[in-house]
Image (cartoon, rainbow, N blue to C red):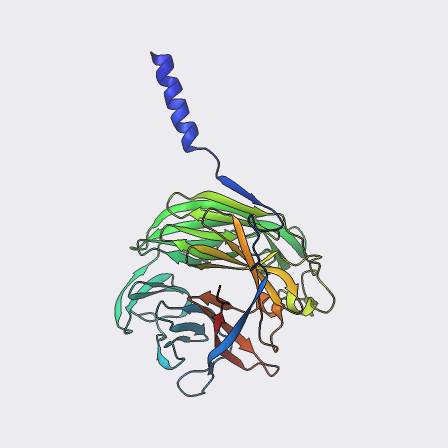
Length: 378
């Protein structure tokens, strides 16, 4: 009897620890159709430019779209909100260390009727209602550098990178990154929710003084209240990650024809640099462009912005269904003044039929431009 009981227990735990589902896709969608490879155009809705009075754009980042079509953007000592027509509403940023005040907001979540900010130095979470009224704040007990990824209102998922082990003055090295979860009270729930290896380009100035920039891709988007999709590979690999259990529940792979980096497009792939010994040093240009340039949840599907560009049609976007199957693709035709590979270094959002992009002209003037995605009627 004990022997059978042991076997049942062994079977139970073997089921629990069964590896994630791996979905392998081919070069073409599973069920090709006549509409496959169609061209999708964009029509401008509005453009938000620096007005120099209520707000300004120096180096905008952190672009997100609210469920009502409103736009949020961060900048130097600014956290700006605009309505669905591009009209300015408010700046949430108030400098200081007191309640509702910020020093360096570096991430946020639009959750139901709340805006939840993450502030660095000190690390804390700050809640506002949809009308901009301060509700509460909580200090975070974890004091290392954090990157805010996602929240379902109860737990907050952050990414943290371990200090690199530097063996030479200037090099690309492996380092460890991890996801960790923090409660709405600011306490660490799981310190090592998930770990993986990434690459950084490092310049060492002295024994304990160095500068670094990331040399590995990391893209993600929300799937539902308990999971995200992320890709941290230069090749076509996407993970569906359960933020509660810390497990990858699905790995999506596609047989993909990689695109080589051309001399003409090299300027789009420079990932910053390190000023070292009186000279600017940059990581070497990759032989191949990263296969995946963006991940966006659109209704029940995942839209994957790829490195494939057709000069006449635009940049290719794959459609992956909720089972991880490659079911469709189309070409997004960008405005003539925007190169498809401009998307590598500049933030954009695809949501609710809109494509919203941080644009920059030759004089480094920024604007936030919203386009309507005009899908062809079947």
